[in-house]
Length: 196
Image (cartoon, rainbow, N blue to C red; front, side, top):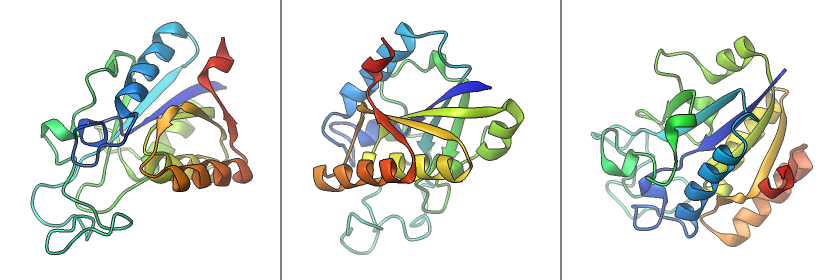
């Protein structure tokens, strides 16, 4: 049995000043780094996901290229592959990351389970190979990609903890609802300071 950390979409475009920046995003990046430095032996694996959208086209309707975004299913252009916006936030220390997961290449994608590793494997395959049962989830945004990733981890039979002090959401109300939904679905809702 091994414990794994999912770092969800801690990218420049999802932090302050980015195309879809959320309040508290930079603090989440720094907080995750503090967690990893303070508990270096806690995690056997660290998976970090990134939106990695195609530069051409609307990525399966994900980008609102010809209309105003509704900020529910259509969004402004963000996290285009190989751009600064798609890079990890500089306050996130990626030296701890053991697997990088890219998602949303030409299609909408919210969950880390919709992405693949650099060698094209699915996340579910890798988790099974490594015997991962326990997963802690942190990152951005609480009400979208964190929610979807944690729900998928539960659906894949994993035990999930969500650290509410290391997530940031688009909207306070929908973020609160997402946390409540995750708790009802079986996730343990806690804070990273509980590890101390």
